[in-house]
Amino acid sequence: MVTALHHVNVTVPPELEAATKHFYGEVVGLKQVPKPVTARQSGAWYQIGANQLHLSVEDEERGQLSSRHICFHVSDLAEAEERFKSAGVEIIPDTRPIAETLRFYVRDPGGNQLEIVQTK
Image (tube, rainbow, N blue to C red):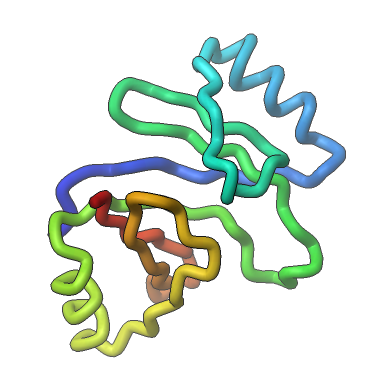
């Protein structure tokens, strides 16, 4: 089902965004890459070989559910969705579609968010 780790999303409060961008870009030395226009424009995306690290600013209005997540690439999104549904896992629809990408979200038993993605 899972073919690759696509990206990991870490989050910070708004007041730490600049310091965290400096940390990942200058201290760690990651290359920042452009985000799609449909993505939130705060934070940053960094390329690490075939994978990415996404830095997001935590939205306090969302409540206790963080946007921190791991993204898994799958070869067949419909098959993956059926597998999760069969296991009784709630499918969380994609509310911010990205061109050339099909995706949905789930939460593991500990409440950690997983993004499940298939690129077209």
